[in-house]
Image (tube, rainbow, N blue to C red):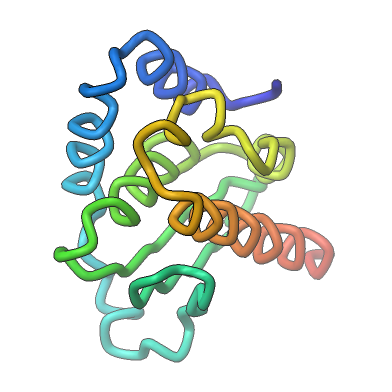
Length: 145
């Protein structure tokens, strides 16, 4: 499995954690999602909704010069599971190169043991978030000169 170092560190922590601590760890990452910057907060049309999520979840990516990826997420605070996954992605992929992000396996979260603490419906939403994120990155890379 090919993961950026920061994301691999998170996966390793979850793998080592007992099942009951995985939920707490996921909820911890919910607090790591920063508020949207003004440009997105003022104009939400630049955010893409992930309809597979049970709660309203929106994301945007930006591939900057040099292929550095920036991530922006919006999910209600009363949805800590999906916010937690967004926090994991933010911490693990923010600042990674576009090639590193695109190489992340679509089901990397299965190695974290989240399937034992999160419902299949929520796992489907998590997969959709990663899929949208990677599609946005791929489109920006392909469109760049």
